Length: 189
Image (tube, rainbow, N blue to C red):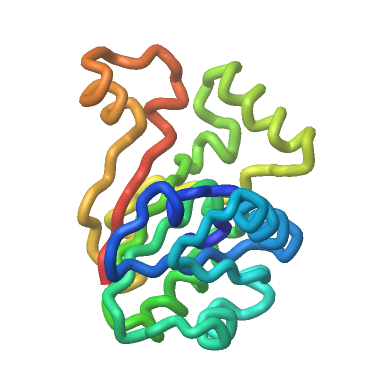
């Protein structure tokens, strides 16, 4: 399942026997995606679900689109967490925990100091303000992913800053200060 899927094409690029993708995003995005796939004669085992998973009810959207709540589920939630109040993020995860029998959830997040513009780095402050200026402000950050997961009754399987990933896969340290404040984690139910 991909929450806030946008124009992600994983369902096409990463097809696998027995894996069905459920993607949720606003109706206009899902219609554009549907049209592009149809025009290109692309058929993948996916369900494009038009809707807002926060305001339209995540569980209702899934239920009305044939999602199997008892099936082991991997969720991708990229580029969403920081754009919503932390209470909405937690509510979304708690809904999943209540209804999906077994899941793994990967998402990216920023530290609270980035959101609050208190890192002391002028470049990061300008970055945050540039997102605010285009009407896409970052609203929430997470400083302690272990406590966050524990509060929701989940466990942390992986958690890496992008700097650690850059070091691992590029073999050198990244120079951007954002690398210390931008992380990717996987939580499990």
